[in-house]
Length: 456
Image 1 (tube, rainbow, N blue to C red):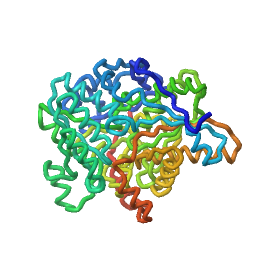
Image 2 (image 1 turned 180 degrees about the vertical axis):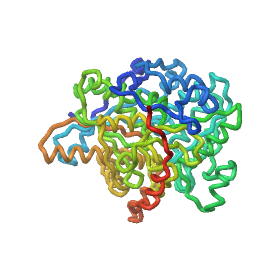
Image 3 (image 1 turned 90 degrees about the horizontal axis):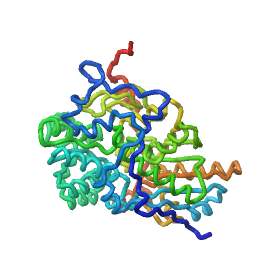
Image 4 (image 1 turned 45 degrees about the vertical axis):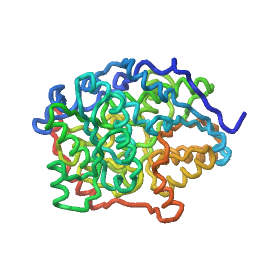
């Protein structure tokens, strides 16, 4: 066998339906609450932000949701995405484990994010929406929604977390090339942004703040809706195309994963690769170990509290039960900007609470070291976010080596790092440092969680 094996599906095998794990949950999720009434929200409460089609996907318990043909047609630009067997990495590690990775960096925007961006833009266009607002950290999501907006004739405004806006100018250039407007957050264009800057003019920003700014604009304008790149149920639903394709490709390889690894920030790429396999297990099939890998500088699953919290810093969103570090928590400015979110997707958090997944956290220097090792073995330079999945997969492979176990490991390489070279330059120069959050700030943020009455 050669040094690398690629498993490809033809275009006719692009899934025709997304998978909804809510249909197979042994226990339903906690309801989303209105912060004023503390009662479950209804479709009308969400209508100012999302088109009704997406609202219904947010709450449905149907197992399969049809993918509209116009969305599948655009998916054909890059899907089905390839799955690789990493023979060279296995050899470099000296492990008996078999390592497979699904490569989502082949999309036009360079990550998994267009899987939901295209779908969201389609449903908004169908509802007659002319403008979308959103937030982005590293820029993967902002780039993807900008790409989708260009395809469907929708204007896109992106609030990019200030520290990433400064660190990653080429992501901003890509968004603008697609026709979007990109602003550093906190900005002077919203009431909330101005209030943050009034207290701290040099604020580095956070995804929570950027969400507040994007939501504020959408809520004030009838022709504008809000789009989110992670966290929400319908976003995770759209990403399951990753895992569904992977299932078919693993069958082609005559293999099945014992362990599945995904990096986690808001939860979308992790859910995309893992949910279809978890669902298979919940319906009586094989049950691989599922490992979520997060940054040690923003560890919502491993250090956060499973509680109701706001999804944004300005408290304009409903309350969702999730693993959270507190909505006022501002993570340090490490380079994996897509993982700098204070909360974890409620669905992912629910699975963690049910002990259906595991979680671990690593610092950025060891993740960059894993990314470099992967690039030198496999030739693909991962995004800083994806480096966390690479690190997790390598650790599992080394465990197999110590234990003499020939397990099969699957991870999602969710994007390439071609726009992140400044971070790699800092790493190779020895100037990239591991960053820690303030324990005092974390304690204060968790102490400020909203008080929610226990259900009767």
